[in-house]
Amino acid sequence: MATIEARRLRKVYGSTVALDGIDLQIEEGRILGLIGPNGAGKSTALNAILGLIPYEGSLSVLGHDPWTQRDQLVRDVSFIADVAVLPRWIRVSQVIDYVAGIHPRFNRAKADAFLAKTSIKRFSRAGELSKGMLAQLHLALIMAIDAKLLVLDEPTLGLDILYRKQFYDSLLNDYFDRTRTIVVTTHQVEEVQNVLTDFMFIHRGRILLESSMEEFESRYAEVLVHPSRLAEARALRPVQERQGFGRSIFLFDNVNRQQLASLGDVRTPGIADLFVASIGAAA
Amino acid sequence: MSEPIRPLYWSLRRELWENRVIYVAPAVVAAVMLISFTVSIVGLPHRRHPLDAPYKTSAAMLILTGVIVSVFYCADALCGERRDRSILFWKSLPVSDLTTVLSKMATPLVTIPLVTFAIVLVTHVYMLELSIPVLIAHGMNPAPVVNAFNPLILLYGLIAISLWFAPVYAYFILMSAWARRHPFIWALVPLIIIGTLERVVFNSRHFGAVLRERIMGFAPNAFVYKPTPPGHIPDVYQLTPDRFLGNPDLWIGLAFAAICIAAAVRLRRNREPI
Image (cartoon, rainbow over the protein chains, first blue to last red):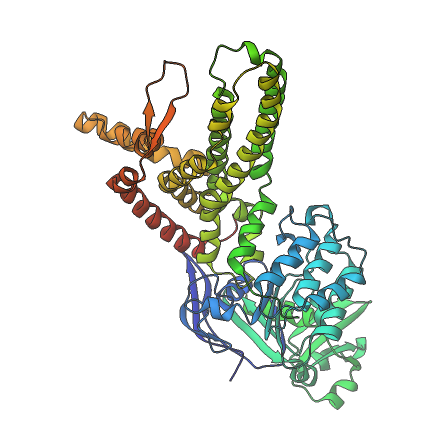
């Protein structure tokens, strides 16, 4: 059974179509990145998956209908919206007591061990912590919950690079164990590229492109084309051509690697570049 | 590793953590009462007022404080968590909307009256300890003040107030789930509109009478009073729980409260941060 399965998932706010009938299937043990510009429908999709909003179409998360069976579902799902949702008045010790008192899958020792590696004081209120420390605190709580699905909506927004890197390192090394599933949305595409197993581009409520990282790496190639081979490169119908480092950089989809190697230096493209190319093609 | 899972208990404690005003406000009122009482003890043997008057005044003030804190607490209960976006954190945890709203309702109904009860008790014990030696030293009989110390009447009164005001609290909680901002003002608007419309259209004042009965009506229903001179706090003569529980207005109010709470649960289900 897939962890998340959606058929013709649709959500309309007034006259705005936030999700325009998307199909998706996410298997256990995957780390999926939902990538798209603001207002593309990423957060709407996550909110539907988390049972926070009603929707049209069919959606099953861990075998539950998120809207009608939210209370059962939420035991097995963890969720970080962004770092600013911990109430400012709560003390570190209180939030741990609280989650330990209400969550059947919370392991206090794990949270304590994680916090011990930080400089967060037990008696501090959330409002007194820096954004980076708040992220660490929230991460300590999430990592101590034995959930089957973790949903992260812009989890590192507003954090400096050190904390962002730590955040994903902790998730990969101490949390992810291939029986869990993680869905993450972020603007910092470059940073999650080597974390993800799959990604999905969302634009105007539709899925533009979905791919596993293996498929992405074998299918797409970026070539720094020699100035003398430009015409030849264009003949191979690149999906994108841009300038960088004084060279023309071409992005190819499904073109033979040996053929490309004769045009210039071949490398793996960034998801961000493919995203820009895809949006350009869709516009 | 496995701690007992008690969502309602922890939700109630959570409300106390967040709303320290629940115990700070009555504590401040009690402190002011005690200071003025301590000062007045000098004149105690020469008082013309009944000796038990300060006990009734302090109890009444602390109960009033509790009711005011309750109303403001309810008006913010489901609005504050949306304003500071913490609703996204609470909703990420396995505590249902029903449990959350019930904990918000139990705070004015149970927690705040218990706090009031404890603080009134402490205040009165302190006042007794202070005044009895003074009275005895002046050859006066401390019986009136000792008799005034009756936690059972206080407890009965607090329970009656909770049940009587339950629809008021529930209504404010509902409005705090609905309003995007200023829930307190939004809660008053429908009351003013209904009252005005009734007056203009039917030239009657039934709605106003219902409101007045709700705000003032618990005491005449729950107690019989001794006649007292004007300006004095009425003296409890008799508890009348049978009359209080037999009043249909009580049960209509509780039914209204249940409807408000059910509506608030549904609203919170659909609510997003503001």
